[in-house]
Image (cartoon, rainbow, N blue to C red; front, side):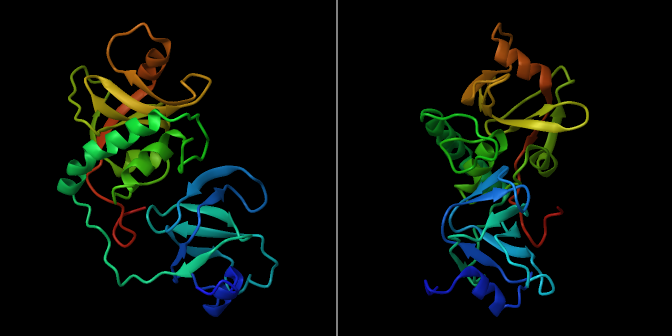
Length: 251
């Protein structure tokens, strides 16, 4: 991409098409709406998106942000145009095929990556996916993304995406390393962790009821108040068995 071509000019060349895919060439932030600075996610360099807003009929408005949808997880958010660097993406290169066998082989690497992140100075960040500061689902999504496995962005979306294993109202259960734990209430999942074995799991929890960062908690009997809090919120467990596919995954 020529450096003197700004994003708006590139979008105009395609008449603000919502079928053209673009690749971001810098890390960027994703926001909840067009004007406020409420972070909902962070986007890695080289992720792929398409335009939702503006359309050709709305493009005369002066823009400071655009609404986009990302290829790897279908996530929708607003991003700033200022200093945005993009290239048109060519789908001629094939993506990694992430079947269930491939995913199970990568679980040790996923867990080791989270272990290494937990050793860094970090704290909970709502919307954090780039690190060292994460939110709960951002940590899990990025851990898998690093190994070519695409999963949804938010906790409740990951819950729907996983293969359901069991509810924690059941007395007996069996977990494997890399299984995903879901927390919340009867209405919605709002927290997620990943099982590391021997009754322990990694998660990134907040300051009010958690560890304000990446930590390890237990499913076993304990006097630890934080582990007890999350045990009381356990809903179910699931397993990542596929990678998100834009053209096939039901969203």
